[in-house]
Amino acid sequence: MPAVQARADARGVVALREPLGGDAVRDVVQELLDAWQRESLDGLAALLTADAGPIDARGRGRGALVEGWRQRLRAHDYGKLAGAELVRPDRIERYAYDDLDGPESPARPADMHPGELYVRVPLEVTRVAGDKLFDDVVVLVLRRDDARYRIAAYGEAEAR
Image 1 (cartoon, helix red, strand yellow):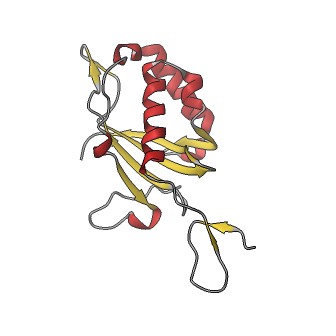
Image 2 (cartoon, one colour; image 1 turned 30 degrees about the horizontal axis):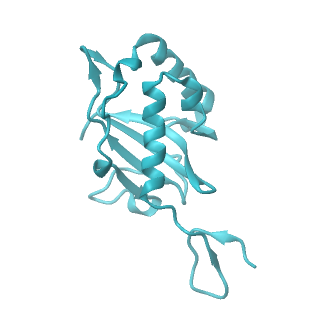
């Protein structure tokens, strides 16, 4: 039996992996936002791949990303977000590797790999009592890990 793949040319025998549905993307986004609301650095870190990093400098690694989150959690009261609806699931945008860099799509991050998924999450709430907690959009690169996604890169951006 050949190795399981997400995509393959129609030659010979291939074993295709069943794609994860939109629920898998929504689940990881909700887990991420729940961890922010609980101010749980462990919860945030648990969502990352072993080689995760900041979206604009993925090579800096997981430690740089986690340390940036630690500093943000110390500087701001993310617990004020508890109970707030931070995202509307119908507004989450997802792009496959090959869908990026087109005239109507976002630019592909330099360190993104085929098979990864680029996700833009417009936030409904970015400030609480004048305190800016997030930029307008959370940007993720997700990688499949068995039956779920994990975050391979994290960033934030202003609305376009």
